[in-house]
Image (tube, rainbow, N blue to C red; front, side):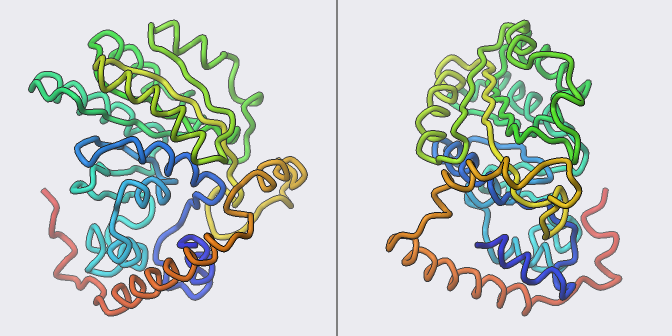
Length: 292
């Protein structure tokens, strides 16, 4: 619903940032984050709205950031692709594919050196990130030093418009296990309860054994790669291929419970937008603040 409001506002240019929407992938964020505590850190990617919100990131400051306002999370300087809410354990996103994976491994190593046991560090990325060099380096380093990292891959089968078969000559499970890292997979990525139950197994291993684990969750991106619309007209995927996900997605079903939730959520969204709109835009005096 939050992203539906972003879609509604986008043509008016009130949203001052490109957006990579999470619609269709919400269950992954909800199911995983329900197993995390505030002291657990998650390093999200540029399609990070769902994880930011599921981990407890504040909604008013979220909208203010997307609208380029001073009351935003990063004073309007970061926008949608660089969200962060450190107090909730959301430790920053980046527009560069795979770039935060090594950050999660490094943070996990620091916690291990300091003796901070029982914490989990999540590196969240899409399947396109698995082709980057830093991904392989991170797997090797995490395995070598046994860092408490959950490598969490949201596999929607796409890197922009390129399918997996066009991009990869390797089998992901075999690659991960070659580094001695346990590999788990969830196929019903549209069901938050399934994601919650099955991701808990992987997260508990990271937490109790303080070692890396890999979790791949099959999911589906409903909207275009970047922007507020659909893009089936480009021909790289079909609407028919999405019908199974639409049919199984619990957010596409009507129920009295959902209707009651929608009323409450609409009130939250309206209040958050009122907060954002009441905040001033940054001035020239803000240009070089927070820069070292």
